[in-house]
Image (cartoon, rainbow, N blue to C red; front, top):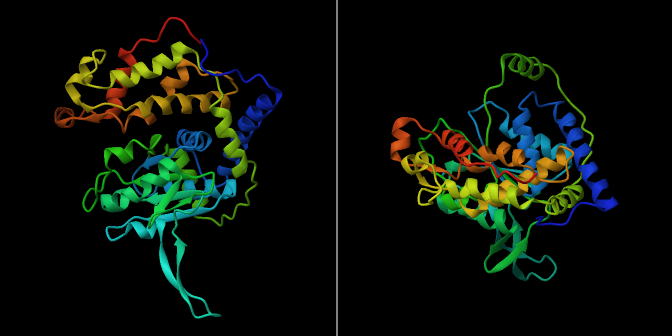
Length: 341
């Protein structure tokens, strides 16, 4: 049983083809400056095609900021970088009302001065360095694509994305992200040190004069159209149930959870995890030249979607069991339905 209509109109097929070729051309432009990190680039692009937000975690020097800034340049989108610090205030992100005097009349009035959140791609750099009160200033923007200041609501220009970065090895002076905020990130992207040959190429290119000129194969309007197309991709009921089964099995109180979850998980994934598994899987299918979601799409995206939503308990931490290990166990334990795509 299909839960959505098929992509059978010529316009949909043409748009799907433009999305696939656009992705390939964007990757080609990124390679002028970004060496390797193919999986990370792919997950960032899926974030754009779905219309979500992503958390990128990696040690310093792995081009997290460079990747997102370069992506904004290639797509010709307004980019804003916010350096999160302990003294950052919510108004430093959203903007605030200021008193402005009219030169002609001398009358003073309150005028809204937009903050850096008013961009298409917002990079929240080292987001865990600021207190929860300031972190929460992003919540409404990430979920509703709007901000409310002094009782007035301002819509953010589409497309709108938040990419946040974290350093996993530096804990002093940091504030853990609240679970509610973590859950709003579609992906938790892990960026690792590249292989030796790629690292050698990074050193070679970054120590020479490098001034690439970028073509712009995909526009902001294209991204909005791609996001709508993704939601029209059909999903067979068995595939939908498989995504939900993975999520439900991650919860310790679920009767379907494996022993590893009962032993090592404090809290499992929310329903938003299943939604993002399906949406990201749809985008992955389209960029692979397919017009339907498959079991393999769900399995391929289980780690970035679930790793920040499967919260380990003290026993797991003491035994060195990570969320990625538990996602592996879930993929082994939850059977795929016999019928479906």
